[in-house]
Image: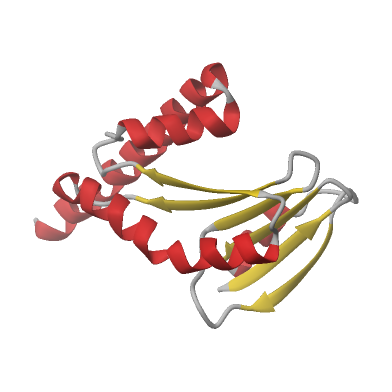
Length: 152
């Protein structure tokens, strides 16, 4: 895993990415970027918006249905110290954590919907959540088909 830093005059994005997926994030001369080995796991994405003065931590997970609420609490607790450090580092900024947790059958909580709406606005959030559900379900179906072939 690598830490990818993308920056321009308005935003800084810190992404935790696999080496093969770097080209999806860096597209064009708008961002200067560099990559560092990531020894410790951090949030999936950290966005520092200079214009709106907010820092957004995005954490994504796809747990089993019964573990969705537990995973939400786990992710919130995991990054509490990081949020505290960011408050000290960026005293004038709003620190926001958005846990995007969609279970293996595409279900998500009201907290997830609210977090995505806060980030994207209600109309766009509905579209993005639908696409996320579709991606999760197609991944689950692929795993089920693979397992079915192996069991036979």
